[in-house]
Length: 359
Image (cartoon, rainbow, N blue to C red; front, side, top):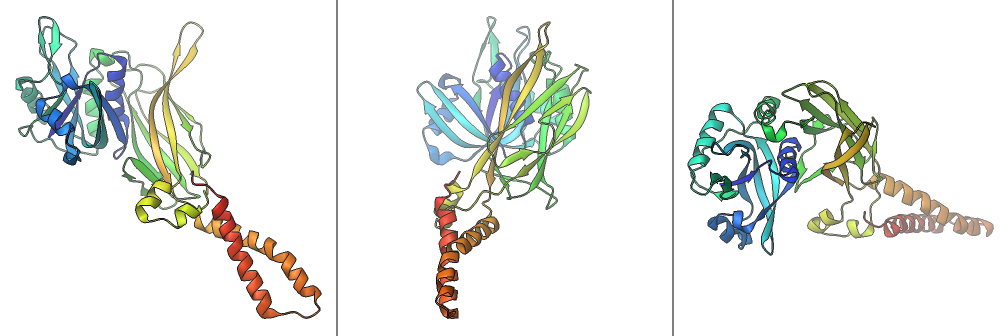
């Protein structure tokens, strides 16, 4: 079991913790480390990609008080699906799983890491230690997909000094397919959407204190996703539940998509993103500042029905001149008409999927 730690000592590290809490299960999250912050076992594994995927626990380390040892708070289970080495640093890709916070087990987890020889600790007023650890002796943590676990995490983390000024703690709990009345699951960090569908993103806000107003802004990165509701969600209560509704368009089939193997077809599937940003009001003139938070990544299934109908219509238009010429001979030839119409429809369909590039 790997343990991936992050503190709140910089704004970037704090955002990593918030994203780990905020993102829906199945989403991808990237962490970055200096190689000197990796245990020897992890460093050897990084050089050997066959070790992937690898189970991990994402945890927050509170190292704000040098008068006591750092405290460790487990947040979520994850799978390490990719690792890349960049000179003196590495980046890893985490596929998020369930929350793993539980009061009793958290105390055991904290005691285990505080006694772990390589974990972060204070020496002469400075923190020393490793932030990506590997241990077979890590206490077993319960995995719960539950808003209660989210609230317990926020009650713990949100009251610490690293997050004292944070106005918003949210959880993008799920993406719901309103036509099929089911939850959309992710594969390889992407949520699969059907063409011409209607979807909701469920957003739950919970704060341990009354911090006034917080706001999220959503932005579509593709013309195939359009919002049905306000793109900004404003939270004025200490706890709240909101929905963001959006529709999916009808991307047409491409020739490359149609004549490709399943794995290649996955690569050629149209894609899109919804970017989530935090909006804050600053200064006496109440200027709004927008900070990017995370991206939700989607696969959008091509619309075969619309593609065929568009192709049939194009084929009819192609067939009209030939039909007029055939009719002008004064003798209607049904076999020839059927051949002309069939060939024209096929030509129309192939014209549509041939000129449509995959997005």
